[in-house]
Image 1 (cartoon, each protein chain N blue to C red):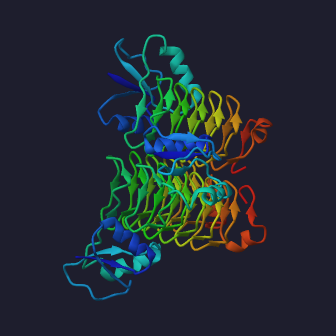
Image 2: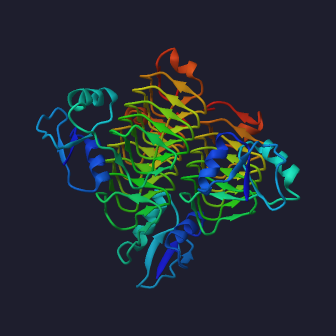
Image 3: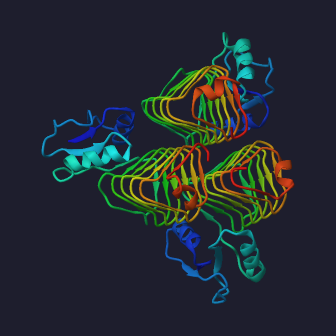
Length: 178
Length: 178
Length: 178
């Protein structure tokens, strides 16, 4: 059985991806049997890391791919725990790390390399050849232009425009709409 | 027969949703028979209110849902007069009021509650748990971040970023790109 | 056989549209037989113009329409060399010029008239009744509001908001996010 860990709103969105009644537990539940597969019910990298530390050696993390996303045949991912929500687009040659979430309507263009545990927010636009380290969070509707590389742990607020990595490196955080 | 009231551009977009030849009348036409269903051919809340005042007690307002939109099974709406255009996404648990228009490619994330007569513009992004009162207009490409509530009648210009409702309450209007 | 001219990233995206093994040549290749059809493997208007000057009188330029785009039945285009990528939306009554590229997830609303050799960037939003002259480049995630007309050769950077054509005419270029 698939157990969704985390009982907030994202858990219900993930449940609707599977389209079947799954169990939703609070995120630190230990009521898990040895045969269960696990699935993230939250989006934050740190919380997902904690869950993988707790359960990663004993359980598999299921991926959740919405039937109304588009994933080009050439996309590669390290299978466990990837989530791709409705309307998301993954173009030619994208590489998606483990435990990464591509949220509603986000689009990742050709040859992007996305690290582990990232969260690409709703409607975010990554142009071609963007590289994200692990644990990056890209806010809703943010545009990252072609070829930008962001360090692990970078957080970009909603509605931002990221033109050069240098803009971000100074503060590690881009505030509202730049 | 379905009569589209309003003979501007939106009327033709709505006609293409039905994919069949419908009658398009000017918005204040009274050449309507008792068996006709009506459909909005314009987007502005105030114009839609006027039509419902004129015809709402005697006629049904048809909904227009584009076949290339995505509406999660859990979405609820008060049926009359809802319009959802091509590429629009309505996620888990969204509630959509009467006579509301979700325009081309707009996305409304989990648990949003949208009032009556609203217009969510092309490509607008409402993150999770956003609440809009009646008659709100959200401009094209605008991002409203998670959890924001906007009062009835709020108008947000195209390309805006709405981070807190307080930003909006002061003026009831957010100008270009904030 | 279809030959993609240009061996960069866009060439591979176009190849994935066809879903079949095509030849990809460098952009100035002359290793083309008389029966080959050609296809652009780059996005820049000037480069596409050079190719059409070289080969347009002797060869046909194929269009590349992604199966996961939406094109309303009423859309018209001058056939040769149009490219529409995954997730793109072309609404009622759009007219698309020759050799124009509508990139990933870009949306063009009702009655827009788009010139030849344009590039509508990833996730860009053109509201209704926008008119673009030839050779325009609209950056990723840019919003052009309803009714704006832009002169031939206008370039708009990523993440911009274009409210009036006058904003653009002065400089012919809108910088980051205005």
